[in-house]
Amino acid sequence: MEFGFKSEDIISMFKIILDNLREGVNIVDENGILMYVNKTSAEYAKVSIEEMIGQHISKFYPKAALLDVLKYKKPQLDQKIDHHNEKKYIVNAFPLIINDKFVGGFATFRDVTEIEELIKKIEHLEMQVALNTIDDVFDNLIGKSGSLKNVIIKSQKAIGSLAGPRHSVITGESGTGKTYLANIMYHYAKKIGVLKEDASFIEVNCAQFTNPDIAAIEIFGSEKGAFTGSLEKKGLFELANGGMLFLDEAHALEHHQTILLKAIESGKIRRIGGRKEINVNVIIVAASTQDLKKVFIPELYQRLAQYELKLPPLRERPMKEREELLQFFAINYEKCVYNRNGISLRVNFSNEAKDILLNVNYPRNIRQFRDVVNASIDAAVPLINDIYDKRKLEVVVNAENIPIDIIEFKDAFRESSECNKNTTSSSIENEYLGIIDQLILSLNEKGYGPRKIAKILNNKGFDLKYYQIAYKLKKAKLNKE
Image 1 (tube, rainbow, N blue to C red):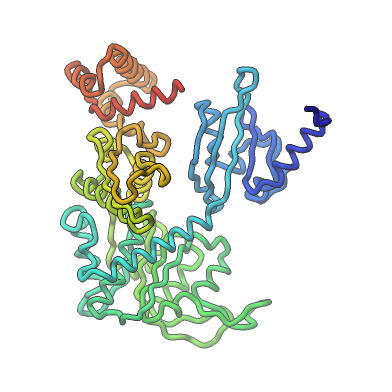
Image 2 (tube, helix red, strand yellow; image 1 turned 180 degrees about the vertical axis):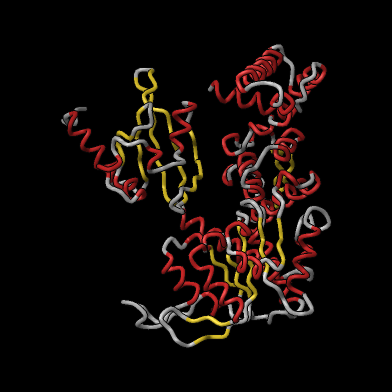
């Protein structure tokens, strides 16, 4: 059948389709230079299409998944990327191969910032419900008698001081549980009567304020007529009066340190454009991934960090706690399935899968650990329409169910090669690791499994665990496909 389209008409047709997609589209050459962008991509980058064409993609998308496509010449699927513009994207990027020649790559992506925020709100509500149903809120913390013992003691002292509750600072890497700890402190304050039962918990991500004037209005409120179009508006301090104000990513408040200090010291705030001082009684908990002692002026840090609570990264927490977290995530998954579908699900992990999940590196800590566990269980369970008995189901998560593209697998081998880093150059180290890789593949081709290979390598002086080798083999298999 002939449609009668000329080649130039087909090109115009595809351009119209691409420009009207709600997803962003970028196409780059082998050097990362943008050859095509659609309207959505330009809108995300807040520039015109003409400004983007001919420029390197990193100028507009510094963490673009296409950079990995150019480097590894492999697809990058369902990548969640946080860009410097505070936007979050889900990206699928692919190599562009024409006549068997690699000539660049293309990517489609969509903004999921609002979805992420909605998920956070749902998680917050679930957290509030869970914390309201237990007598001792700190009992819900995994590691309460281990790595978090001192943090809990300090948290209780900060809230339950005989002289009255103190302001505090929570520091830790992304995903270590800062928001969760702040919520626990709030519920603890209500349990012991420091706060009334109806006291507010006001949470604000300070990094969302890219404009200092907007930040001041949100935090301190405004009076009608203070500026063109302004209305009478309560600020976060007023909303949190009598309760707790949680300042997440507090390091972003660099423009408002002086007025924040004044509010803390005097217990009074003044709305933007207002003359009247308003009394506020607020417990402030400031959280940050940065060292606030280096960010804040000394006076402000001293007043806020009356108690400094440092949460350890997941990699520094003992294996027992990681195992408890793994079980906790699995149980939550089972509960979700039962509540949604009425199916009694039992999740088990093979020894190989369990060892991998517990030992690989998670740069985003507990949050990323949870996401990887959930994705692994997703891969192991059947679809709802494939279940014969819709009342009871038992699954085993195996190593092949673990999504290799969302974990930092390389770091699993870092410790085993640490001894060589002090005595060899980078090039020699790479050659050394390459020899190990070849040896693993060679032994596998001879029919040896991960455990047998690990034993052989250990006898030769190479300190590698069998689960590391199992995952190494999986990665090699995927690269061949």
